[in-house]
Image 1 (cartoon, rainbow, N blue to C red):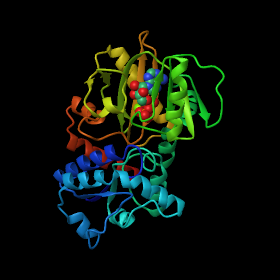
Image 2 (image 1 turned 90 degrees about the vertical axis):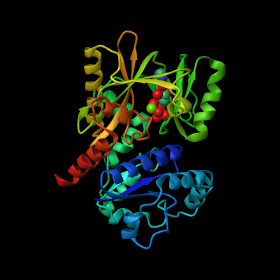
Image 3 (image 1 turned 30 degrees about the vertical axis):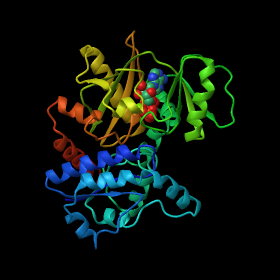
Amino acid sequence: MNITVIAGGTSTERDISIVSGRMICESLRRNGHKANMIDVFLGSDEYENSEAFFNADNDLAKLADELKAKTKSVVDEAARREENREAFFGKNVLDYCKAADIVFMGLHGANGEDGKVQATFDLLGIRYTGTGYLSSAISMDKQLTKTVLLMNDVPMPKGITLRKGHKIEYVPFPCVVKPCCGGSSVGVSIVNKEEDFKQALDLAFSLEDQIMVEEYVKGREFSVAVIDGKALPVIEIEPLEGFYDYKNKYSGNTKETCPADITEEESKKMQSIAVRACNAVGIETYSRVDILMREDSEMYVLEINSLPGMTPTSLIPQEAAAIGVSYDELTEKIIKCSMDKYNN
Ligand SMILES: Nc1ncnc2c1ncn2[C@@H]1O[C@H](COP(=O)(O)OP(=O)(O)O)[C@@H](O)[C@H]1O
Ligand SMILES: [Mg+2]
């Protein structure tokens, strides 16, 4: 197939997305597809036409480095385009997406994982991997996720959302402060005492106008991928220091165990919670559900990641490997069940 992998973009997870995109694209090529990667925001005018784009056997490692080097300038350019009401999509991006048999979504975070690109593609008749615009939007917004999941009896930590300028009356410590629509733990703080609360609010508000203050759940952290309605083995994540923040997520400073060392009953319950969470928001094809388990075995869903990381250290590839599914088989499976969306 001719496949356009879109990556990069303008979110706080831009660099991670570039790594995911590169890994995905290399894998698709190994699987025999004509695949190339493009930065959804920066675009490219390197190719004469889409055929040349798909046939290019360019060095993806080099491309990824070049795209990452441009990350700083993207912030200013994004502000400029927004101010001038210019399109988000970079040069030729939509043409290469339209020409593809399917677009592989290598994006993470805002303008990628939040459903806007998916909605645009729906209207343009472009096929893409992963779930649709509505479930993406709900999963991206931690407040909406809470509302929908709690309504469907999926347990989540208690929490409230705050808008800039709003005051909060009473906060039990420890608590967690996080942006409502962030990802990769960017702007997330665990606050143990009153004195640190303001700083945590300031940090989260520097990223978004709406944030969430949540009860801190003390326990172990897990993640469960759900592909085509079925849960993969549970993975446990233990940061060697502190919590599962950005640094620990991507520096390899965590111990990840898959299948997790929990009882069969706990594992089955976690998998069933993950599947129920996905069904509640209407996830199609695949996603990854993060779950905390307290010492008394009570489980709480933290969030649903509708375009989870696909880097070498990401969790879904590890969970797939635990049942003997290689990275290349995983990308192929994602393509297949994404195509099924359009064949029903
Ligand atoms: N209520 C909570 N209790 C305990 N730890 C939490 C809580 N909320 C978040 N965390 C920690 O912060 C990390 C990031 O939070 P999460 O809600 O998943 O946001 P993100 O979308 O940035 O990944 C989690 O993986 C977990 O380690
Ligand atoms: Mg998370």
